[in-house]
Picture (spheres, each protein chain N blue to C red):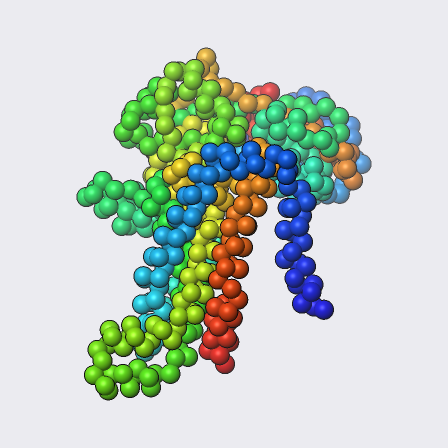
Length: 259
Length: 258
């Protein structure tokens, strides 16, 4: 019964959007350049952000799960901070670090004539900053509930550390990797605040789908609804396509880890 | 003696609304209704009015101690949507006439309380030596503008067109503060924003004036909302903004008289 209420709570706003959607003009809005450009940019950027989250997030999750050192919980808090930080603040913080006058950014500008703000790379950086913790948290939970004896066994048989990681550890956390990637991808796809602050909003370069929806809301709310529905449809298709089993597996590993 | 007198004048005018103490003040439109005004007044105002209206709110409540003014500052078009969807507003102040026209819940005819002109916003000290609107078309400059859907963007586009300047903005911001942030953070070299925005940025930015002939000026209309439960106080607030005391505060923040 309570579960039904929860389901309705998620379904009703969606029904509201469908109810108010201007179906007659929908095709016109959809096939507009703005919508297609923004959708393409969104898909490209969030896929990149997910890839970067995997490349950097998995080793980080490993350290958090396995390494024993002072300040580990402080490091974990630091790495998941961007989950609770208002994204707009995250965007400003990225300025101070990677902007033209930022701690690192000023050297990128001076030595390589390279600037992240107002570029598609800037969008990817903003999305990665916000989305990576979702992957790190999921994968860390899987790492820490992994039985270390299998790894020890592999090492005893002479497998190198890298081989063990590749052939023993990674396969056992596969579902967590997929679940974490999906979460990070979904978070990137919906990212708004950090993107608009750090990367700005320009069609084709930095105006992702959520930014296009926001822009449309100012002038043509009907167009905004259509664009939002496209974003929802794409995310829904991906989440359903990956099926519940991956997410369930990760959920189980999360709950075991917390025990 | 003279400067001190000038500084005291707005306060004196504000006090005049409760006690008819200051002999130098002119008759106030709000004075007549003063005794019966009380309760909450919820003001939905354009974000560019944030600083000025906050101070006006304080002055208004000290003139009418029985009242309590609450503000909701956001983009004019967001506010119109909220009010048309039934948000509990008593007063709406817009940053342009076209958003005011979209309001279906106005009680009576809106009137203009201020005007605002545009300025080029640059980094402090103007390191790129920008002097005119045409300078913005230099390819080495990083220029950021508001989206043309927004009043600030519409005005900026009109100004650039008048000057015949071809400018490719690096970003088209959804909020005028977005342009300000990009310049104050040092990411953009210049943008076109309202004079009041440059003033609000203080020492973190500098403004390059745009001559009247090539400038675009926006009206700021205000109106009471139909569903207001406290229309008397709401009307008194609007009159207060139009009064010399209110106008003195508006001018202080860079607004032009209506």
